[in-house]
Image 1 (cartoon, rainbow, N blue to C red):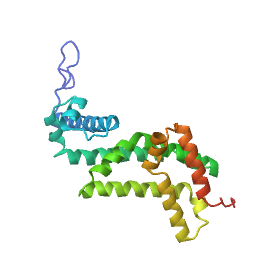
Image 2 (cartoon, rainbow, N blue to C red):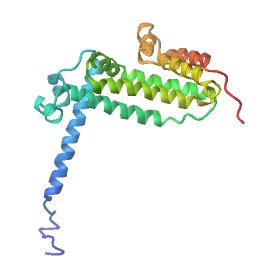
Image 3 (cartoon, helix red, strand yellow):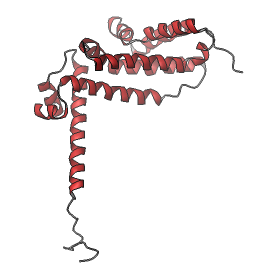
Image 4 (tube, one colour):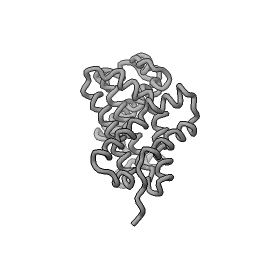
Length: 217
């Protein structure tokens, strides 16, 4: 022996401790949980129908029992999937630095928002269709709208700073309605616009809604 390690044609790895085994189980369970969430989101993108537990389990590669070992019911899974999506979108939006002249800020904001709408429209529709009497889902819908408003106030702060409080609020709410998921869906779906064409519609509308940009002091 050397340094407490048994040699058998080389160093023999020590058996994992109880803590290490517990940590491994937690990591595997968290990984399974994440794959179930991703399966749910993947199925939503393919069909407007709310996925069943059987379909989610098949897509994730686990049993139905595995789902309910990690989520008490499908409602809890919907809430978890919404939270997961919100974290992803927040990270995506935060990575875009909205610093520049008016034209740059408008275009970058619209392109980022358009990508978010393209990717997460199915989840947004499922949220609204299934909110029912669920305080959890209602709160998520409210929070998503608040985050959109906060982003608008951030991106267009120079222009909004020139308005009085009431007019400023009205302009922000008009912008929020303009860049809503369903507005994007109409442009892309009903009017069959390409991503670039839909972006151009939003860019022109936002530019008209905003007041003049104040000169840099």
